[in-house]
Length: 160
Image (cartoon, rainbow, N blue to C red):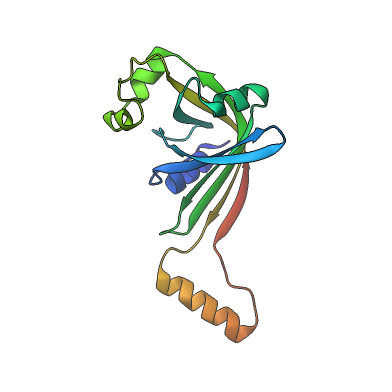
């Protein structure tokens, strides 16, 4: 992945506070919201989790995951495919910890249940649409009048 691709992806996900993590659970796909813990994008996504959570068991059985971000106010969407693993590295936890996480971990970062899910991304796909409502409305109106499809912005797949 080139730096400009990583920078583009980071620009699309940095404002999102939450992502949806999809795992496989006994033949069924499960999605749940996860608080993002990113400082940039370099091909890896990070999320705090309880070490004993069911999603950790799911990842241990099948590490393939999908992570999606949506910033609907800007019409920016990103989907990641990759592999997840549990990380209990105290240095990484300390580096990524913020006090807002006490809402989920009232005993703080030293709680033995505090862990990270590291998602190593294989592929990302993004949709970067015009964010202005006026620009979007104009595009839809133009499409109706001309009988063409609206220009929905940039869609691109990136192999990481």
